[in-house]
Length: 396
Image 1 (tube, rainbow, N blue to C red):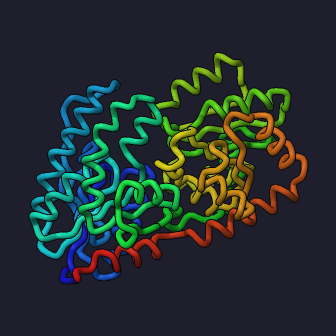
Image 2 (image 1 turned 90 degrees about the vertical axis):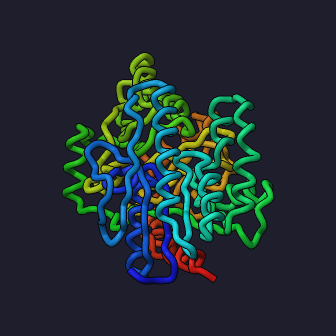
């Protein structure tokens, strides 16, 4: 395919995987092909996926991982290292003069390697910053030793053609590290393409599958990762223990799931339920089957992470209760758009009052649901993202 320079994206996950970044990147890459761009994606060779194939006009090159697999930190580190080394070779092979390489942040800090390769190949380098490392690791572990990686990361940011962040909180941190204003761009994420409110019968079937009946369902969907304050959800469940018609429904997986599931059982929170992640084809029903959804964020992570689950919830028109730093950008957006309420994760009583008000006054729930749907329609699909990346990565 001829065109104004190719674009090489690097992210460990891509179609048919259904992580958040895999879905975002798949939507974006295929939208850029539709605009006449030559697009290559370098991802991991998960399971039995082909090492090289084309889908939707996108050339997919998959890098094999380490043979050492399993639980624990060491096998995970081996997988990251294997991808890092393989992706370096793949980027060097794929880039042509005038191309652009765009790195996401999985694996962390790979953008430093990509920026160096791009300079040697006469290509441009861009950072699509989904999470800010090593600050995320510092916030989660409390270990300041992670800061040793900051100079390498900062240098790559400053030497790149530009950095694209998900919001103003993240953008302000990147600017503080020395990235010039003309090289800093803002692009919010979006709901998976085609996600919209499902028919009532699909919602009813999903609730029946959960055994929810006429309960007031508080949902949490997606990654149960370390940046999410899931203990705040259990504290809220404790505060609502005396409400027999309120149910908490976790739908997802992640490194915190086993711990949170065990903690809920240990504390006798019998109305806290767990289900596996919903595949993309059933995501709309799984989201819409909850009466309201929780979005959480650990204190200290608000400038490093933006929970993109917000957009999927909004796309199906469900109210949002945000538990986390009340001055964070996502808290401000939820409140200013009228799609929900923000409460500190340390104040379960305030969150419980909000839940009871929504349950007891359906008109409040409907108003927040409508505002959420309006927000979702303004952030649906990859068209705006494709427009921006097409413009930024055109040579000259």
